[in-house]
Amino acid sequence: MTYVAPTEDMMFVLEELCGLDEIAQLPGLEDATADMVGAILEEAGKFAGDVLGPLNAVGDQSGLGFCEGQVTTPEGWSAAYHTLVEMGWNAPTASPDHGGMGLPEVVNAAILEMFNGANTAFQLCPLLTQGAIEAINGYASDDLKALYLPKLVTGEWTGTMNLTEPQAGSDLAAIRSRAVPEGDHYRISGQKIFITYGEHDMAENIVHLVLARLPDAPAGVKGISLFIVPKFIPDAEGAPGTRNDLRCVSIEHKLGIHASPTCTMSYGDEGGAIGYLVGEPNKGLPYMFTMMNNARLGVGLQGVGISEAATQHAVRYAMDRVQGGTPEGAEATIMGHPDIRRMLGLMKARTEAARALAFRAARSLDFAHRSEDEETRAHHQRRVDLLIPVAKAWSTELSVQAASLGVQVHGGMGYIEETGAAQHLRDARITTIYEGTTGIQALDLVGRKIKRDNGTAARELIVEMKTTAAALKVQSGGDADWAGLASMVEEAAGIVSDLTDWLVAQNGTEPLSAAVNILETFGICLGAWVMGDAAMAASRRLAEGRNTTHAKAKLSMVRFYASNVFPMAAALHAISKAGNGATLALTAADFDLAI
Image (cartoon, rainbow, N blue to C red; front, side, top):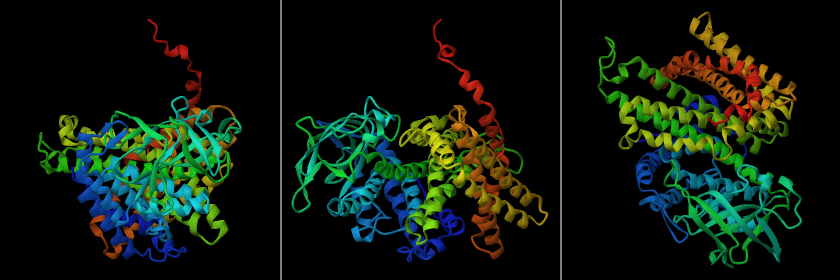
């Protein structure tokens, strides 16, 4: 499997669809010019293709070693991690004050996609560290920041987040882990499961962010606090000192991401692990959501990266494989078969739409964090909040579909592990589950992000969709193809508007039944919006004679999206509003397996 970072399309999205020149005017991002960002992405692409890509199959095949609580990563893993750290790729957006590169979030989105496309199992470690940096920087005391941030930013130490417990699953209100005050610290006890990179051999220390309850904490999610619990307690010089009372008791045997240790962690078997409170008591869940939102966008970019990798893999195979007679005048390889091009078109067009949508979410993060205008910050924070569940869930669901189509393009050979197509499917499958399942993301979208603010953020987005549709009408000049694209985006805006109005008006259980279908509909419609903008940008570049090969291919993908992807939105729109009665009428008796 050879991965090639799609830097040309990434730069197209950054410049044309995300307004890189505007981002470079934000405070602290003045160096983020197109030339500088292009050079950064080229270097990141080389690292992804030359270092991470070759280790992907190695990690999948060899997996992890585990003995007496110690995890051993595959051959080459530790060396690759140290190279990543030396090159500064561990936390590109972190402040230079702590050793980071200070890059825009939207540029980091491109880097995350590359590294995930090349090797998802590896990139999970830096992804979680970036989330830990966000949480500590946002809420910890100055002393804790001074001690932990420099080590996390440089990658000398890695970070995790510990939420899930065996009895609780996604129900964080059921967390039982305890934190008992003791002087300037707390004694933590309890068990956490599904902790990604909870134990490994790539860094000298691991900093766990752990949710636990104080003795007098109120019940439910309002009684959860957040603690820093290091594997090794830093000494007076800030170096790893005494081993803390925590250990990895097992690692999971998984369908995919075989080289990423998914750990069961036990805290306090010998009296209590030492932990340090982050922020205020009983506010741990909001703090952790900072980390989770970072991770959710990162997982959405995992979906885009895996989709891109699976597409590249399938395209190469289709260009080389000769089998069966192809239509007259078509390619001699299986690329000549119309159904192969249909499958590859679905893979590539949806991947490009998902990339643009995820990058636009990251763009809004930059404005929400750095704009000097309060109203602009608030607007973009609403946009981020609205887009993250869509970018996470829609992109990851697409990755499963794209990887499955990739296996299909390979035919019988795709089912054979040696071709590598199956790994994409196995690795992709977890992305729709961790950091909040697709169903949880959908409930977040319809409940917190649409109903709670009476559709304000969604309606702001609809205005922009209508602006794109109007611009496409002007572009059309009577041309049927362009008029069709204008109609697509206009219809997409209408569907999003209608579903938003419907949701705001609903008070019963129907939105719960419709949530996943609504999220999927939003994804397709917002994909139409970004593809409409992409068409206009590609047309301008063609007129200027710039990047003509890429621009022509982009227009082909937009047309394919309009005719083969977007029509699905109408059916899902209808199901979202009319299919709930039959769903809610189902009872346990309807699934009775008794014979």
